[in-house]
Image (cartoon, rainbow, N blue to C red):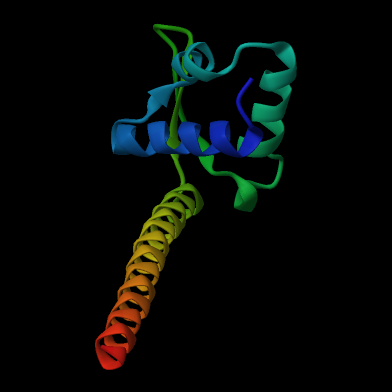
Length: 120
């Protein structure tokens, strides 16, 4: 099983891609929820009792299909945006670290070469 954080973000990314059209809860459950334990986690985390804590929200009941349509909430969208910004910051930090290490290695190499040239 994937980590809870990983599946949480995967579900939000998936819901975010659906935008205003929303998605059927059955599709979400088929795609991400494998066990009854995971379904309980999904209900507790993504659809809590407090409406201000929900990252997905019930939009409409499709009577003809006997299905429920959901969409991502503003809180869910801001969570996705913050997550993407964090991932970009991690990539930038990794890139900056590599550049810094390269600069230090080059600086040391130049210093060693200068010492050798000075001794000759």
